[in-house]
Each structure stands twice: as structure tokens, then as C-alpha cells.
Length: 454
Image 1 (cartoon, helix red, strand yellow):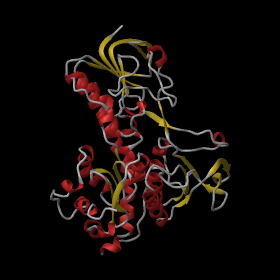
Image 2 (image 1 turned 30 degrees about the vertical axis):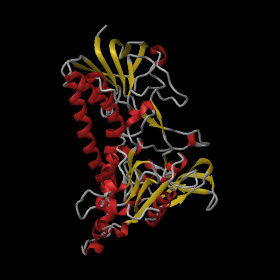
Image 3 (image 1 turned 30 degrees about the horizontal axis):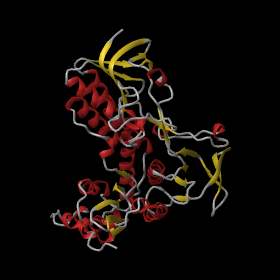
Image 4 (image 1 turned 120 degrees about the vertical axis):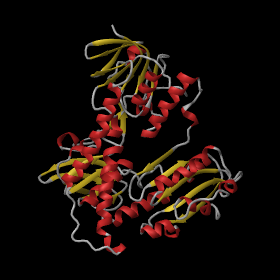
């Protein structure tokens, strides 16, 4: 029975980096992967979708060429070429991760589904492995809800969208949050009709109401139909596609389209790992329970990435790796609870978020002051001809420390980084405003946003 210092199950963002770090420290490492190397980000998430978003943006700007004094002919989208470009980028990333793992010193790659057969034993491909330490980076998958009629109709998820061969004539998107809005906007820009169906009263409900409203206006301006308060959803196969029955406060009781995309959340890949044989506990939602150092109820096992429920982003998974590796190899005493939330929604323009927004601060009982500036008053946005959105910063009223920000506008996914350290270090507004910034940028206006706090 082969024995390793460490076994890493899954090759998403945390697994390969951790395997390489442990290998570099002189440990023998087994890397186990049942599917494609690179996990969700490389194969079904960040890499392919952002490649498609880039193509959609190019089409959008080309149609607006006259606004910049540029004369073009008819703008057409070759959807096959869009998908081929995406596939090429994915293949390079995917194969890169696989080659990296295959070349680890003291490492060995196993292909197949891994299951625990004991507290320190894993079975994969009919072979049993013993490990001193086991790291789970098994990720998650799209949630398929128990919706009436769903078993009788074809539907898409963010995974199967990657295999589309032709452009949908009319895409129905169930789910008005990150995945749904990104796909909805890009497909509209490629030429599809798009209807976004959301059960809640507004889009991206975790954001402030003004952010939700601005996103809805932005998408509707591009011709996307948004249906809110859609209750009692059901689906039905139609001769020319599919229909979704819904009870909304406004609009027709049915939406018809040629394709259906489900974008209603994700669930962890923890139901077929034999975790009970290892004494690894799950919470009520199926996520692996971990302590602040990401260690499970089995002291030999750690859980990183989407499967632990402590973050649903590539960057949180990578941060999990950093925490675990630093603690094991350097005794750093790092904790996942020390990090500040930061993420982006990759619509165009994007939303960059850090720390608390206005609603979260209110819920926490913190009296706040808010600064806000429309992108129409940001030179960089005006010069680029992309003035949708606004910059919004939330400040604690009593101390003046910066709590967080919601930046919706061109470059917001980059500009938000200039506030991360300020939120982490609880920097007061007056201190933040003393630093000189480059003109013309979006970030340079953040101190100005804080001049008129209300």
C-alpha cells in the first residue's frame, strides 16, 4: 500500500499550488484528479467565461465604433470562432496544470475518483493510499433545483454552456445573480434574445439596492428582458424550445425561449467521498466543517476551496492554500476569518466589492456615512466613453474608518484593490486621502468620493 506524506484530492486553485509547495519542502505528495485538471475556474468558470466576456465586449465596442469616430462595416459575431478562442485558452491552462503536477519532485499523479476507506486511507482506481496529511480541494457543481417539469426538458448549466455549438436564438436565464447576469449579457451581445428570470424582488440581492437597480437598468438598456418576483417556477417543453411558467407582479405569466440556463447556485462535491469513514463532518448544506485554520474534524484532513463553504471564489480558494501552507511549513497561525471579503461581478461595466456595503453595515448596527459619485464625473470613464455606474464608499460615522465599497463602472474590478488595505487596516478617511494617485484613472477619484459623506 503506497504511503505519502500528503495526498491532495482535486486540482482547482488550492490543490496544485499546495502540492507544489509541499513537494518543494521535501514531502512526498500524491495528487488525485477524477476529471479535468484546473477545476472549475480553468474549465467552466473564470477562464472560459472571461474569454467569452472579452469577445462580447469586442462586439459591443465595434457596434459603437462611430461614437469614437471610427467607421466600420456590418458587425457580425462568429460564435464558432468565439468558442474556439475560448477552448484554446482553456486548453493551455488545463494542460499547464497537468504538466505542472506530473513534474513534481517526489510526486505522483493518480487519475480517478477518490474515496476514504479509513481516517488516513484513500482508495483511487482500485489502489489504496496511506497519507500522513490529506487535503480536500474537490470544489462544487451547479445546483439543479427541484423544479416542476425540469426532467422533461433540456437545460444548460454554466458547465454545459461551455459546449454550445451554436448561438441560442432566445436564452432564458433562471437566476439573476453573478453567473446568470454574466452569461445573459454576453449572449445578448453575441446576438441572442435574453430573458433573465429572478425569484427575488431585485437582481443580485446581496448588493445594495442602488447597485441592483443600476445593473437592471444597464442590462435592460441592452435589450435584456428582466422578470423579477418570479414565483412558483415551472418549465415545459415546447415545439420550438422551452417555456417557463411564472407568477410575477408584472408581465406575462410565461416566458418562452429556445434554450434554458439554470444559474441558481452551486453545491459542494462532498456527497461521494466516503467522508463518514474518515470522521469528517459536514454541515447541513453539505459543506465540510472546518476550523479557522481550515482543519476538519479529522486532524489529518484539511478542506480548501468551494467545498468548505468559506468562500466561493478562485481567490478565496487560493488564499486557503496560502493559509494552510504557511501554517504547516512556517507555523504562521493564519486564519481564514482574518480575510476581508472582496470580489467582482464581471458584467460590463464590472462591479468591484470590498468589505461591508451599506446594507451590511446597517444590519451589523454600525452607523455609517456614504460617499457616492457617478461615473459621468470620472474623467477616465468620460474619455473612454463608458460612463455607466457609480463609485460608492461606506465609512463608519464614529471613527471615520473605511468599511467597504461598491464600485460599479469601467475598471471597477481593478480600482477596488486600492481600497483592500484600507479596509483591512481600518484606515480613516483623512489618512486615505493624503496619498497621491495617478491621473487619469478611476482609482484617483476614490478620495474625492469621500469628500462629501452623507
